[in-house]
Image (cartoon, rainbow, N blue to C red; front, side, top):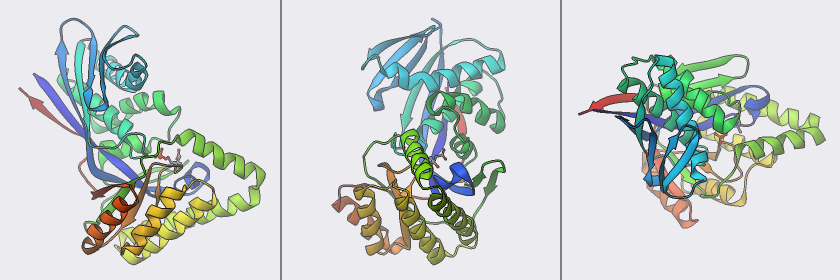
Length: 327
Ligand code: PMV
């Protein structure tokens, strides 16, 4: 017997970087999912098959033994190992495990692939061992795995992956979830440039140290855009959402977190008919996101391909983590 769990990735629509200091971030669950299949194995090992990502191997105690791929890949697997172990601890079980990981979510691109994989790992291992975990428990256990990668992340990624939908997050205020009354077509463009969230947050912090008043005004403006953006999103006022996305991109660029390729992708998307376009996530590479009518999606997709971006037409998904038994 095996259990498959799937969980969605995410895109930040408004408020990245600002949210580190003040104001909300608005985050969407996107219909690209990570998939984890867990089954028990008798020899006590925790075996990971991540062949899509180019590696497989197992842990005996804390030691990673590669079967395929480089030994340092064990580091990539730490969050999954922690997620699986914390889940077993939580339900008072201890078993060897085969964990197969597949994902439609581009990695290291700010689309929440690590959180989605952690959430799906917790859900599949939990269900397999008869844990009957609630979504809140899944979310908290996945956060333990996330901490291994990101230090002390905000918790947005594991929340959106567990529950799906649209989420507002603000430091010291917490997380609020929303449903929208209509489907919104977004297109994500992956610049395929790797980046580190930690380094980009650090860059903004240093700029703020040098120019505190100026940067605080930009952060204030991001908070305003994010707040207004959520209101526009709720009333499905797409032209206004687009305007605010454009302003948000300009503010992020002024903080120094855009790159030429993202700027080009953003401008080409607007030229191809998007209501608005901006970088999404930490910047410095990773992805941009554009909002468009259905009729312009293909134009935008072609424009992104022309500048060697990787386009993904996505919708918001309200389907959070899901598990199913496979016999
Ligand atoms: O890691 P990403 O690309 O999803 O971006 C995180 C968003 C930031 O605001 C830049 C950092 C944070 O912790 O909120």
